[in-house]
Image (cartoon, rainbow, N blue to C red; front, side, top):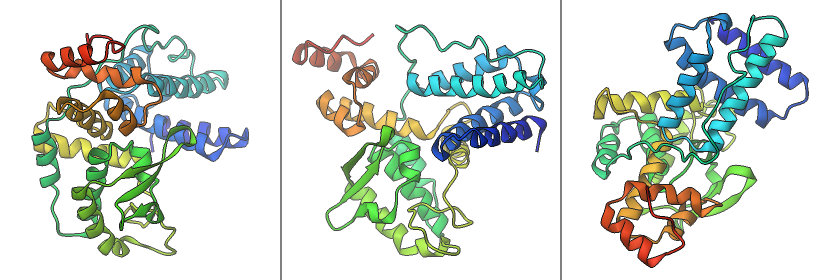
Length: 303
């Protein structure tokens, strides 16, 4: 464990002592572990090694990955909290997160290029079909793409959220929202195959989580992110950045390219604000954009 990682654990422990909820601490942990992995790759092993430039680069990378502004704001808050705590406790001489920016309020998030449908198929087909772990991984990708799930939504699914007989799943989304989504036939088939072998991943009492790690516990978001990144590089090339949210991002673009109404896509993605969905219009062909503009004058032209 590096000094930077050890400091992060001490900060998270302090949040618990201060009475922060388990969910808040877990979210901070996930945000911080991802940032620390990035910092480690840049040679930052101690808190004192981290500069404002390192943190700016991390936020810029997340922005280029297509992370929503709300998520970027949450990441910045976590970094400010952690490095502010280090500074207040005299662990570092200056706070590199003090002046972090995520862009102007008017700035639209930069969208990463979506996966093509053939890219998605290639990634799915690259996962073998030999073990329970293979079936779990294939099922996870099918749900991230085919159901447009956020990673946290997928990893918190429970078996009793699945109504296989009618092809419906209950999803617990952001802000405590709960909704029901259809399970597409392709996803339903692999889900049934995975459930038939899921018991092989159970260790100890079965608490009902759908996706289990090798140790029989909940899968960790960072581990899933790393696995998907490696899969993307192996299948699509070292230059292609693939992350869990890119599957949700890609299905939105694919649906719009097929001519689906943007309000249907908004409902599918469970966006509260239509403006959040409008950003995907920038990634569809020009003639389709014109069709949307003519049919829906209240939709601003894509830029």
